[in-house]
Image 1: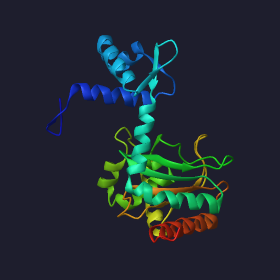
Image 2 (image 1 turned 135 degrees about the vertical axis):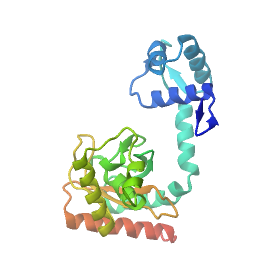
Image 3 (image 1 turned 90 degrees about the horizontal axis):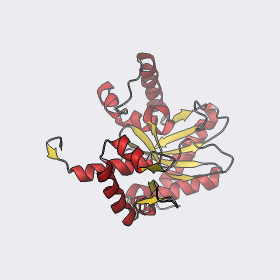
Length: 248
């Protein structure tokens, strides 16, 4: 098995696929379900699960029959945030905006055509734009579109940065191109109204390219107006400048 000419290790592939499946599943799964969904023999799945349980990557319920992610996954994810330079530099910026604007604030990153929220400072009564750790198609959120506006210089690069599973109809693609042009003009992206019961409205500004070329900060704002969006965008840029010049 190869990817781009490089050989892939079957056991490593299976381990990663299993962890990714468990991460995408809200409920714990049985061995039979996991083996079926990944196309792995039950005997092989049993050995893989046993090893991962012993190493803390997978946990079982009290009956030992259903499996979910273990605490080692949390420890590794926390280490990623702790060691990532952009996250370290931008965390104080997120904290400042959370205090000053008294609302939910996110730090997100474009990964594989999806925006993934890396860090959130929540306000209890404000609906978030993204859920921490859960990917959303880049075109579907202001945080994703503001990064696309900077990174996608033409239709070819834009298509390359959209999720591989996504084929936008022509009218939706035209609307995305129009929105990207507006984002470039004003320097920020806006979700003026929520199109998803789980997501709220807000404003996003891209992080400095040398620090986080695929990162953005999003500030949630209910009942968003265009003047208010501009004020929030200015506040985000001011906080970023303060953070990068040591004034936080």
